[in-house]
Image 1: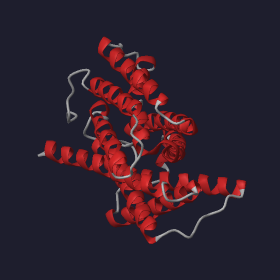
Image 2: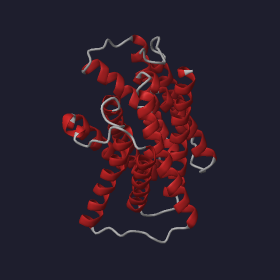
Image 3: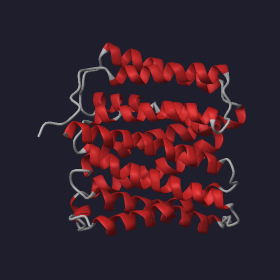
Amino acid sequence: MKYLSVFFIFLLVVLTDVVDDVLLGYVLGNVSSVVTVIVLWYLVAFFAGLISVYLTKPNNTDLTNFKKFKWQSFGYFLSSIIAAVSFFFAIVYIGISGNAILSNFSVVFLVLFGVVFLKEKLSLKQLFAGLLIIFGLFIFSFGVEPASKLGVVFGLIAVSGGTVMKIFHKTLSTKINYQIITTLRAFFILLVILAVMFALNLQFEFLLSPLIYLAIIGGAVSGPILNKQLMFKVLQSMKLSVFSLSFQISTILVFILGLILLGESASPLKITGAVFVFVGAIIIQFNEKKTWILEE
């Protein structure tokens, strides 16, 4: 029964990740002010998180626990802010389909992290798969319009920040209540963006259509709150290496839906690069025999 419940949550992680990206892609394609979208997105996410905490009444709500794991908490929130902001700007330039390709570079970062910091041995299969991903990104970059090259940079920054965030995810999920973490994550991102808007005197765009507001509410609840809380929950029972399969599944779905639903460009180079990247990412995931559920 535990296998089925963990697998079901795993599928929900994939679903909420896909819904989040598609709705965000729709919103950013119809709103000119990116910072407006970020503020509204995480404002909704913050209040949704507060409601979640209020309804579920989690046991471990002592915020002093952050002091015990201050460096892990600082690393999580900092990497979250960097990843979130870069992610939004990457989608503006290259769309959700392009960002889906770049996000698979996270598996290369995870392998490098294991080799450099955990002294893991680099296998030939990992090396081959990593080269496939890098080659695919190289081909993809040639399929991106010159005006969108900056999106590739933002995408890679988002990937590196997101990878670090996932590592801290694994550590903090066993120490601090995940609902508190995800709610505070939304709050800190919102706080930083508001500070930047005030410092740069950026204008806020209020006059958005009801459909845009509905998409923001749906995406903000699905991604920053539901997805991250489900992620924390499933990481308590599943190995990080296995769990990362959800990102490969969701990125393939997002890539396809970005082309079909949002009408994003699908040049031959972009599709060819995507194939190399997705194949390489999948090969890395099946590098070794894995146990889906952690032993009690």
